[in-house]
Amino acid sequence: MLPTDLRALLQLYEVTDAGLVAELEDAARGSKGQSWWAQYSDVVSPQYALYLGYEGSADMIRMYNPTILPGLVQTEDYATALLSALGPESLLRQQVDLRLSRHLLSLTEHPRTNLRVLPFSAGAHFSVATPFILLSFRDDDDLLYVEGPGGGLSSRDDLALMARYQECFEEISAIAYEGDRMTDLLGAVRGSLDNS
Image (cartoon, rainbow, N blue to C red; front, side):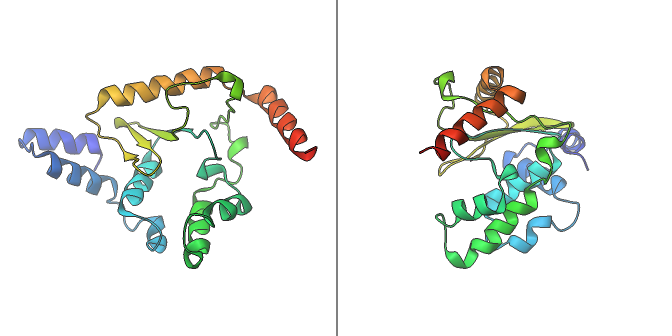
């Protein structure tokens, strides 16, 4: 059942308890059998599992990360180096495998993928230090996932916060480098690292 269909039924039957509505919406999204990440249950928190469910059903994913490559584009070596500092070694392999299961091998060559780099010269903006992900759905409202220790999925009721992050994404997308300009910037950065 689509979430919008479920909401219509809940309105028809006058179900207004916010907690129950949220629980039923989550069940509707996850009602397609066992999730692909079930094998990683040791390293997937309930909140992250909820995010993965949304990510899997999103029509569009817009990500911004100011400090590290987003998980969807990380290589095995990059993910291993990053995750080795974040948790116990006994779970490292499983965490890396989970990350690579989400990695699309030819992501940058996919016609619907647009990769951009925001140069330091762009200056400060609303989310200068906070990674975030905007998930868009064909049959539902957008969702915001703010990463970090206090982060998580936003409430769909916080329209002002959602709008602020959507505006921020549009602003940084407009000034970010893409195509040849991005490639030239990355080449210059790599060259400066090779020379140091």
